[in-house]
Structure formats: structure tokens, C-alpha cells
Length: 405
Ligand SMILES: Cc1cc2nc3c(=O)[nH]c(=O)nc-3n(C[C@H](O)[C@H](O)[C@H](O)COP(=O)(O)OP(=O)(O)OC[C@H]3O[C@@H](n4cnc5c(N)ncnc54)[C@H](O)[C@@H]3O)c2cc1C
Image 1 (cartoon, rainbow, N blue to C red):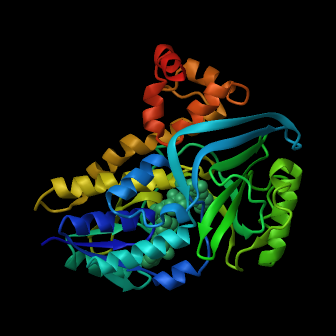
Image 2: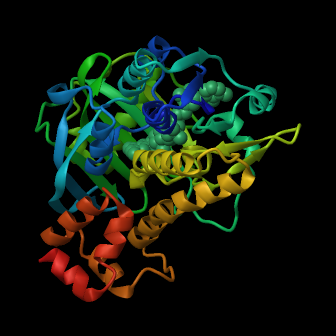
Image 3: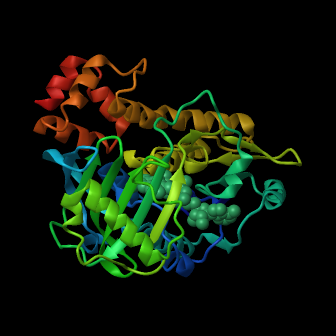
């Protein structure tokens, strides 16, 4: 039986671990935190699971939360000026429904389920010298540590673009938001200054709301340089909402953090890295998901990409049979993933109006009308589910017209 080690228990590592276990591999998951430490520890990122990802999770028997979890089918879109005045408003409808769940709940439950199903979990923060040793005793070592330091083992890949620009991101989970519709997510776009979101979410402390800010680093909406307590950070975040998204701030008058770990400020730099990490003794490890591609967070493609990466790596590993998992295999597996993942940059450039060889002019014309045309808002919101499929659906003016109709 082939032995595989996965380092990191996030969206990608856990999905791959469950998939391999189901196919009869001997899988060990190495993670720095226990399930309780994940569940009641710091938050990191956003939490939207789009319909196709949800369908994949269901196919692996990993949709545990049923009606407890808010399901969204539409998005309120506020288009504001740089100073927060509303220029237009639309509700975009999605094909299918997604769920909104705090990453801490999902990862903790999946980690426990992995052990219950016969997987082996070792609680240990891995180092480079650990990996060096593990490559000698496992057939394959996959590094899925997200934005963890171990990712620096993988060299940057300047030939590929992740799209977008560095972003100062702030995320928080709050109790006390107005209980408006549980089936709708909300976003406000304040010109070039900030994108702000407000969504219902299931947290370790029950129903709550997730709020997020994506701002230009060092710009007027970024307060990450200030030394603040968690409650002070929330206060500053709500001030930014008041300035740039008053429609969302009006729903947050009673907002308080669900716990002191429930606010996170982070600089996210979109980038692509090489998929093969070389170790001092000559062994090789395979980089996965955010380790190899960190995408612009406001595109909300992180979980889509992590899931695609897990599904594609799973297929490639299974198809590889008993052959060695060498650097050539790793590069091929990543190339297959990149065939999907490159559409995040495509989407980011399309929405920012940045010319790219494979973005047709009629697609730019479409997206310019997103704030004012209902059918285009619906088209775009559904496109977030799978940017590769979206690119194909609007690849010619005729296809786009048919899809809109
Ligand atoms: C601020 C922010 C907002 C985001 N918002 C969204 C959003 O709204 N929607 C969306 O789809 N995506 C979003 N993303 C992206 C999404 O969260 C990531 O793409 C996704 O979680 C990456 O999955 P992963 O498996 O690569 O890593 P992660 O889910 O980050 O998991 C990595 C795991 O590895 C563990 N680890 C780290 N170092 C080690 C080590 N040395 N040894 C052992 N374990 C280790 C960590 O503890 C963690 O459990 C956002 C990201 C950020 C940073």
C-alpha cells in the first residue's frame, strides 16, 4: 500500500487526505494544531463555499452541517463611489446554492472525521528537516500549509500570474448584526478604495455574521499598521464600513466579536510558486493550493482553487499507479491544476479591465455594465462558482448572448 504524507490540515490538505483514504492509500496528516485548537483558535480567511465546491464536498461525504449552515443563492451588490455614496444597487442571483461556514468549524470537523475514518493524524508543526526525513519514509509528501512559512521552500514562478494586486484584508466574525435574509451575501464596492462584505455564517459559537474588508495597502481604508486590541480593531473596521459601505454598516449597530480570536488582519500578496520543493538531501515535495497559488482574496476563489487542486492531485496520484512520485510527476500534476487555476487571474483581470490575450473585448463590455444590468449581475455572480467554465460560457459574443438570455 502506498504511503502518503500531507502536511497541513486546511481545505486542500483535508480534502486530498479524505479522497486518498477512500481510495485505499495509507495517509498521514501532519498538522500544527489539534481539532480543538483549530475550532477555538484564531480565524484566518473568508468562508464562502460556492455550489460546485459544495457538490464536491458532498460527493466525499463531507457536508456535515445541513440546515444549521446558512445557504446563499444571491448577492446584494452595492456600487459606491470612492467616498461611499451609492451609485447603483442590484441583486445578483446564483445558479445553485452555496454555504457560509467559519473555516474553524469545517476544518476541525473534517480533521476529526478523517481520524474516525481510519486516517492517521500527527500533531506537529513540520520543519524543513522534518520534510527531509519524511521524503525517505513516504512515497509522496504533499505540502499544503497555506500561507505558512514552509511554503518558502518553493521558488517563485515569475512566468505565471496570479492576477490582482497586494491587498490589506480584514476578516471578523460578529454577533449582533441585523438578522436580514439568511440566503443572501452582500458586497459593497467603493471605487478603487475598498471592497467590503457582510454574510451570515455558522461559527463554533453558532449563527453569526462574517464581515470582511479588502483595501489597498497603505491606502485610506487600511488600518493594519495601528497597534490595537481585538475590540479596537473591530471598532476601526466598523468605522471603515461607515465610510465606504454605510448600507452594510447600518446592519451592524450591535456588532461584537464572537470571541477574541475572531478578527484577523493580513496582507495578502497574490503570487505563483514552483510546484516542486527541493530538500537539502535531494528529496522532493509537492506544493499544493495556497502554497503554489495565492489568489486575490476579493475574487473569493481560494476554496474553489483549493478544492480543484485536491481533486486534480487525487486523480493524478491514482492514475500514477506504482510509479515513483518524482519531480516530473509533481510538475505534471501542477500543470493540470494550473489549467483550471489560471482562470482566477483571468477573472481578476477581466473585472479590473486589464487587457489579457485570451479575454475578448465583448467580455470587458459586459462587465462594465454589471452595476446597472440585472442579467449581467446574475451572470457574474454565477461565474464566481467556476471561472474556467464562465470563461468558456462567454468566450464568443454569441455564447454570451445565449447565456444571458
Ligand atoms: C484574508 C483572506 C481572506 C480570504 N477570503 C476568502 C474567501 O472569502 N473565499 C475563498 O474561497 N477563499 C478566501 N481566501 C483564501 C482561502 O482561505 C485559501 O485559499 C484556502 O484556505 C487555502 O487552503 P489551503 O489548504 O492551501 O491552506 P489553509 O486552509 O490555509 O491551511 C493550511 C494549514 O496548514 C497548517 N500549517 C501551516 N504551517 C504548518 C506546518 N509547518 N506544519 C503543519 N501544519 C502547518 C495551518 O495551521 C493550516 O491548518 C482568503 C484568504 C485570506 C488570507
